[in-house]
Image (cartoon, chains in turn cyan, blue):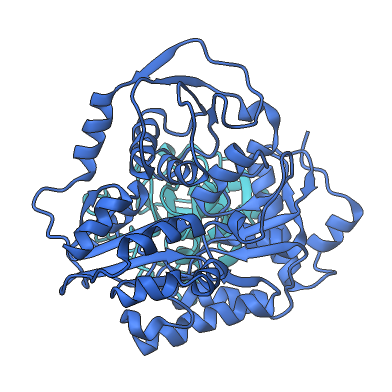
Length: 128
Length: 395
């Protein structure tokens, strides 16, 4: 799938997919990577070490710093794939150097699939 | 058309002017590409948000420290409120640990050349752009005030993107930097009298909730003070994400006028007040100064508190900018407020200070303060006029 580069990098990993938007500030524990937003589809799941696939970000601009905190704690997602990346997540990925791609039909990706993200070229491939 | 960079901008992006400049340009150009900007433009003023250690945490501080290694501001840059009064924090019940960490944040900004006075009303303390000037501000209330009341042009920046503009003097040309995106989309006729700052906050709540991120055109408000406009700006930005509004006869921007009109009545205002008033709120905290109080507001409050005393078990914070506090000290307002047992707190505010668990009920004149008191601090809230707030404090 051809999308658009948000931040460069190339990595392979297991997809964690949700159809719900994510607010990193207040919605994700900056130390563990666990989604803590009440009632969220991913509540209780950790984004750490996953190819995190979600429609777009929401919520406070402080969310950018939460992605940075996750990276420092080595709990960040391996990469982020969005339908459309919002400024909070975009800035978070840039300052944390997390590969990110948007303009992807995220419905085609399922949780647990092995996915390669070639963010530099804006390409996301389902490997198996 | 993609984003085109000048030779100098390409060099900045390639790291020829250092690490912090490179990172800043990555942020600015990426946002520019996402939003379809064709070029970068210079900005002459920056306001940075994300200053309270309570919001930033250690990771945010790490990022700032990294940027401070070789990043230096290129334009006038001021800061949003911190989590404490930078001098008198101890008597406000802030812990030593928090104070040390908050000071580390301020020091990192100072190393970059930021003017480290902390306020959400930079336009009252010398960071005042003029009509038509391109700026890069974070702090949603100040963004809304500067776009609408002053007529400067800024998007709603976040902390890191505002810092990026400070360190490069640039932003990408998209959104509210373009006239076509500043045109009114929905018209509101206000068919009720608005008296004090709390009423303007309630109006912001109503319009914010109804319009979301569209541009409102508001009619039938005869006059409004600067204080009322800052209250409205804060509220409409908090509840709707509104970054620019037009108020007929009051704000300076040109716009076409939307045809369909929505009416706002006294009933709507009452309903909004009910929404922001929690039942059985046990008021033990009174705060005025969201956005930061002007010297005029402080003078009025000082007169109200003169010779009175704050009731035991209640805490009063009047929050303002440090230069305004200094003026209040010179004018004797500080003494009147503090002799009454209230605090004139500078640099901080009730929305960003580490207050969770310290109080149960907040009374304020600010609709925005109600939002953060409820969400972040789990306080119950009541919205009243400034006079009623002070009466509650001394009753």
